[in-house]
Length: 118
Length: 113
Image (cartoon, rainbow over all chains, first blue to last red; front, side):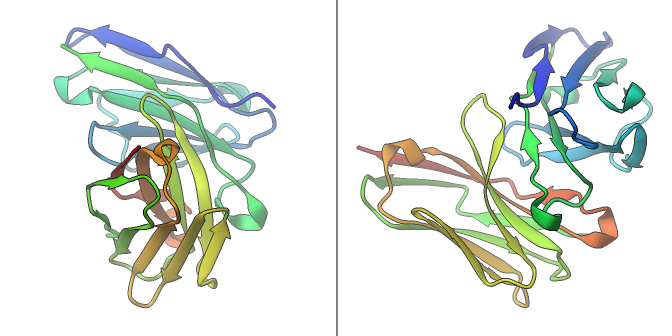
């Protein structure tokens, strides 16, 4: 079974530029998550989708971050304009359902997209 | 607001030692708790998941316990090996926050040969 795919793996941009990250979840997984992990910190949820609807985006800085999941499969996370503090790893994850742990529902993470803003 | 704390932040042990990683959380109304492993440059891999009604889970050399009333969990690693070197993250989910995972900062473990 293919895992969660993310691209690009690494990106260096200047502040005020824009960047987009792409995620392809495991086939059949209805729930997709984007997490931000700053060096030395645990991952922080940015946005959670159930199919193509947003379940939780309370921690997404909406003035500069946007995310979409058209057709309920792939997802794109965009940052525009980027700030120095956006330097982090952006992790995409997926699960069958919302509610990891329900009926053995397991969350799977991609390897992340590493962003450096200079 | 739920806060998850992991102690110690870093740990170095010689191969073969048994070790304990600690996780505490401020709101005991959790749905479940998970322990993850993160290797450098990689994503997270789920190790153990404990439902709120359970006290412990075991997988091979790993044993995780949960004391929900006191807001604590421990991950016990028996007979540590250099391949266990990684960052271990604890995360809790709650039904009143859409079951989203709330992570601690992790414990960075180094097992030396």
